[in-house]
Length: 167
Length: 99
Image 1 (spheres, rainbow over the protein chains, first blue to last red):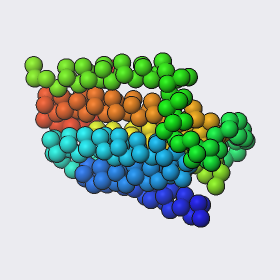
Image 2: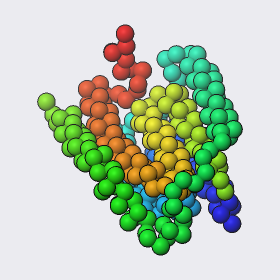
Image 3: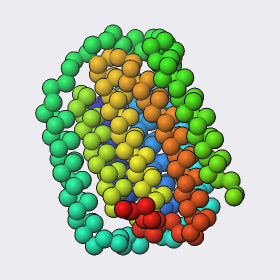
Image 4: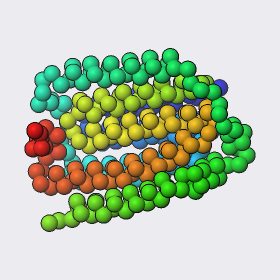
């Protein structure tokens, strides 16, 4: 059952991702991106990470995508013609990415990955709650990185205001 | 369902995102492709977190979410600023810094 759900969400994600890359109109690309984000949320639920799934929908499908659509509407950019300045760019890019994909898939498929190290089985997560498990780690072992993200967000806010104001 | 399923799906989506960054001329779509690549990495993190039965992967994903949000805000502001200055959003016309 789980494997069927996995392949369903995986197929949706890959097709929608091809849509993001292939569609000329940025609005359609943004809608495809929303489909990718939601199918990723489904995969996270399958991986017994419901907190990450909810955060994915709220932050990616909610905030980030709204920002994209907002900027698309603000700029109303012309539909991408797909004609680059460099004639050999397309074959070169496809060649490089093909090599990258083959390398990644081969290495990852052949890799012998370590087996379970911790004790957080899906049952334990279901019992304690994913939010509690992630929150406990976030505010103990990862407290410094967590505080650093607040600094990063502050820098981003200041930077955006500086960039966006009229001079 | 093994960790290999998830990391290979992650690798495929990362490659699709890389195609988008290299091929498309519209910076907005290039940006969306970068988001796609970030998401692919997130999927690998959560997959490892699940199958190693450690929570660390999920914490990393949480931090990546924050970084992605900040990155999108700044990046889109830069695109808007370029559009204001030049009335165009084609990456080929913004090559002044090319050496």
